[in-house]
Amino acid sequence: MTAENSVICPELGRMTHRERFRRLMHFQTVDRGVHWEFGYLDETLQRWWGEGLPRGRDNHDRTEAYFGVDPVEHVPVNIGIFPPFEGKVEVIEKKEHSRIVRHPDGTVQEEKSDGIRTIPHYIRYPVAGRDDWKRFKERLDPNTPGRRKWNYREIGQKLRNSDKPVGINMGSFFGWHRNWVGFENIALMCYDDRELLEEMIATTTDLIVHELSAALREIEVDFAAGWEDICFRSGPIISPKMFKEMVVPHIMRVTGLLRQHGVTVIWTDCDGDITPLVPIWLDAGINCMFPLEVHPGSDPVKFRKMFGRRVLLRGGIEKYRLVLGREEILKELKRIEPVVAEGGYIPHGDHRIPQDVPYDNYIYYIREKLHMLGFRKEEIEQIEPLRGAK
Image (tube, helix red, strand yellow):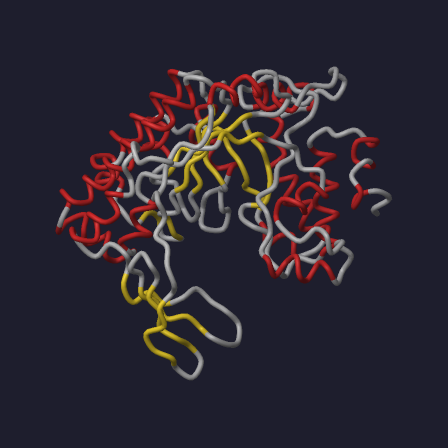
């Protein structure tokens, strides 16, 4: 795509963050692209403190702000377990380098007690059957006193003239349930107790619809964000056919509600190779894919060729390329540049930035990405870590 056909037109007058987001995600011309990132591992920040990152930038949000990431507003909704399971973590057994513990929700896991911490080994997931599900279902009641803490009319009045895009959480339709039941267990449940799984999905969807309805009635929302993480390098943990039968009708209840209230950018967060699910999500009303992990096969260039402008995109810059130096960083940016120029795409790392990325490499990546997005030189110089960067 030639520069003349790009949606990025730096000569346009300055736009608000909200106007820019709306226009970009509808393939309209913008003064520059949207600058978002997807955060950092804790170990990455610890490394960067020794390489020049100020110590005060000690979490995801502060570090993003330091690198000039464009701001957003989030509508608060409580669509999860409420009240939360509370109580002490019970130590069941102590071993030489680990311990087995039981959490208040019923999860039993073995976690390392020294050395490098890793993902704990799950011995028992919190929902092992119908009795456990009953405990969870009671905490997914939309009418539980105290669940809704906010005055949505007041929030709507405050955000009506916001210059930032406004987003809302739309929850999960299979990923949460996978966390509660366990990977292998939910795969078996699809066949062994489909009725229970469908009840779980329907119950969470009822809660999501109830709470989003109250918020959307009062607040103008620009995007909705969901979460699944149900794909791996080899594809989804549930067959596309079964996903379409069991999950899609519930997704459509929520996406239909969102579109009824003018929300036209709807994404879900799913790692791994999402290719088999993309056409199903598109038909169900989820039109934006995120974070587009390139190595497993979720490539923004590939998806735009496959699905055209039906699909909106976020992410898709292969994070491990940032380890390899300036030449590889430029090559990666050049690779996705045609999709940037076409619009409907917010480029950033395809997951949280890993600890083997040097701080200087990240500074260079951000600077070159902003050049690609049409930032003016003086705008780049206003971002402290980029000031005078070579």
